[in-house]
Image: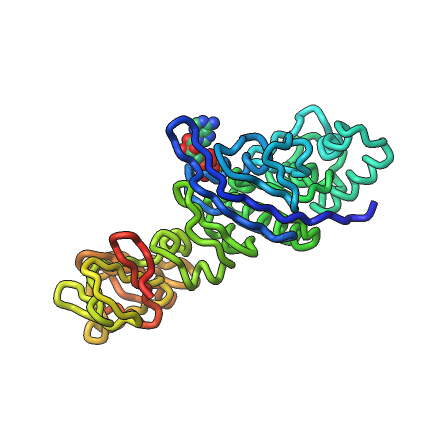
Length: 356
Ligand SMILES: Nc1ncnc2c1ncn2[C@@H]1O[C@H](COP(=O)(O)OP(=O)(O)O)[C@@H](O)[C@H]1O
Ligand SMILES: [Mg+2]
């Protein structure tokens, strides 16, 4: 059997969902390109699973339409939507072998045995499971089980692949490995994929585009680099990046940012009494107090390996700085923190919007 997936676009059009009085999705609009790897990123409870369940037909929207390709599937049963879904819990059948687990969706569809066997081998090869076909789930590691779930999902050759936090049950090392495997598999098959996660690293590394969701409202939809370098608002700015972007509370007057008597230059213009300056830890540096944009005392200094993370207490706000791995400042030392004007993001504290 030749591997050839039909790649479908996906569209949510003004989708709303409430459970009783609780609004979970508000006017949710999202278009996914054929073959795209789209990551839906948001904190727990933001409505990610609900969006996937609406797309797969397990949940009906309170309003709005859902399309797969140019077909309006809003009122179509899940089994006719041509979608495969992988969940956080892999839900393998314990008494079936790897091969039987993988082939199960085709068996249900009453495909002939020879064709199923060929498809099992084909799918198993995609995730390097071809040598483990006769094992039972209990004889597999967590990562191998997750691969069985993936192979089972791709065997039907769906036009859309949905994944709901599929790696969150794995330990950190395996998660990193499986992340690369998934990216490779999606790159090879080119199948339209919507992947839900609360993990910003997964979003940054896997996605062609990231959709950031907060409380059922889409905050930004853009490629990872754009989300990182040009966040639309304070929520996105703080959600992406580790450690999180520093926030400094103050006010904006013309192109100057003011904090209790100190001021520094920004690259925007405006007059906002309560503003926030955001700056990423890797864009700051620690210097002699006389050279700092702000001065403060070292709160902690942590050697991470390839860098030292220095947290400086600058009065009302703490600022994290990614410093050189050989940085040798001690807790309590007075230091300056240099904030480069071109790498500062200014936000209006009242609504979190970027000031440009
Ligand atoms: N069947 C349901 N009945 C009532 N409330 C629900 C139901 N499913 C989800 N919710 C609520 O909707 C919100 C979003 O849930 P969910 O989509 O699972 O978020 P996420 O996947 O981003 O963690 C949560 O507040 C959750 O409690
Ligand atoms: Mg969820």
